[in-house]
Image (cartoon, rainbow, N blue to C red; front, side, top):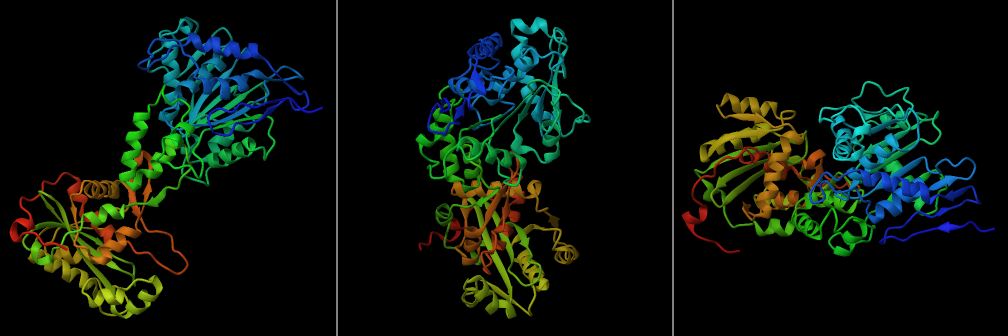
Length: 546
């Protein structure tokens, strides 16, 4: 006898096939109706629905609540699904759904002594869903059934005396995680979890004594493909594709496909099931336009808005926009100008760069100096497949004595810069440039170390992006600087902070980024709000045309 199948196609994202598995399971509509009724007693807490009953959106009902609570085991009537993995883009009502599910498991699931938790990597993240649940209860007729009363912002534990049940939060920072007898666990933003041990402790055996424990993960996509979240995502995708049997896992994934164009509205519609309710097409259009101009946030747009698993590292600068910033000027045109310097020293044998940044009313003007050991020029030319030898002859690279970086040549160029220009400060990587810093300090030239981490590099990196996109950057078309701009990638950290990264080596070919990293460091003080110098080189010597 063929198994009865229930398969709904919602939107264009693949839907998990759910079967009775030879009669081992049946569907209980009354159980679903009970959940829907309970959630209607809760109240929305955000405009424009503030104070209105919580109504499930179609995808939340059809893809999550209905299968999760409706499918039962024929053997004992307990729920079929013990785990759920739900992955949807940002702003699709994820937190509100998590809160409502948490409250049902806490108050209305018929479990005496239920222990229900909202879990996340950090206490603040776990508290988002818990705070939403408190707000949903605060304006609900159910609030009189829960203690403490009144429910305050500072309340960290909710109690339901009727069944002696308890509801609170857990995180990596929590002191107690072992020995819990969990009935309901809602894990929020699993992709952000840095230590998989929390997830394993909470999900493996923690509810063994319960009749029908339920562990629900609701998250957006992440960027770490070595994480526990990506492993759970892959498992869910295999279940959806019928490549793996797991009768206790409900898998729901809304995402853009590999071949879907991230700039097209049909792709946005496909993976945002709450479009038109909690998120608007106008919001997506705006964010897409911003991402199209700033390559560094294209991965962020695709991850948060299209739910695509991306890399932390991606191509950074739009070379079309970079080329528009080119102007015809020489070092002589900048004489006497106020500037800041950034220094990127190679370890031994590779490119070293100094880039000067001249803030002016019409933008920031860059001037690079690039160094390469004379005895490494031919080797580096062949290794990197870059015409360093020609660039040396054309004056774009300064050859230094010997086989390794000559830091005295770097000091000499910076010393000369201090006499040609009004050099304010020299920024450098403190790990590599101690000799250069000491020599400059001895000459009375101010220096500052810029750590190559997110706090140190993100503000000037964002400033470089802003200058390029706004057309307020000026560069002289130096081929070394342009090569570095074309090569450089960017790593994105929590909260959208960024820093430049060297691309991975391809075969034996190295792709150098030193001049653009020096340019980023030269913008450190510009990013702090330095006021530009009045005037422009164009005012002094007129326009030149390429």
